[in-house]
Amino acid sequence: MIRPILFETSNVDVVDMWAFISVHLALYGIFLFASWLICKQSMTENESISVWSFCLSAVVGLILLPIYGLSLTTVKGMILILLLLYASISDIKSRIVPNCIPLMILILSFVGFESAYLLSMVVGALTVFIPQIVLAVINPKRACGGADLKISTTLAFMLGAEKGIFALIVGMLLAVIVIAIYNKVKEKDQKESFPLVPFLSVGAIIAYMI
Image (cartoon, rainbow, N blue to C red; front, side, top):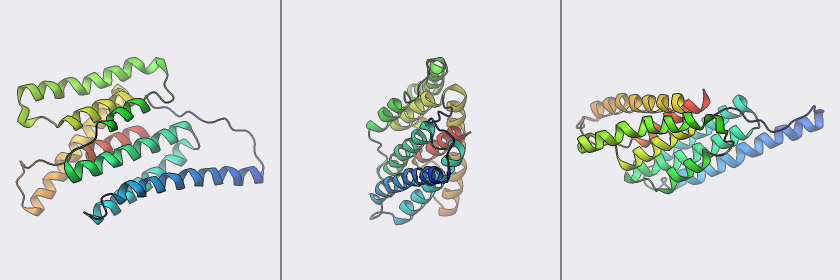
């Protein structure tokens, strides 16, 4: 589950306020630099993907700061964005996402962890995992890929039941709408496979911030 976890602050004067602003800018600058490094890997193959990915991550990172301020929740959100950014680019480029990504998301789930939310986290993960694994057994051709399953499940564990299910639904709906329009414009086969991780990432980031 996600809830704001603020760093300790006290009443500040003008000098301290400038220091406070500087820390915010430094945090955002580090985030932008890390985003640029991740996006740079796809620059040689598809520059437009790199530019759009960087711009979107920069905007989302900037939105996190006024919502949660200088907090552990902001840092955690930025790390999540970077992980999903890398996973999305990898999925777009090769349809392969390294196993370390869902593992790192799982580890990130325990940053600022509170045991009171453990049940919701487990329920969220199982609710997302079980239907997908059943579909994979019944009709493998219509099932999501292994990376999609692992990432959606670990995201649901991090976000908790309500937000995890919300993230999956939003991601799937976005995928259906965007891919249908894209295939129609490009006159491609609607049954052609497509990268799902970018859409799951958008759903997860929206869920994280609400």
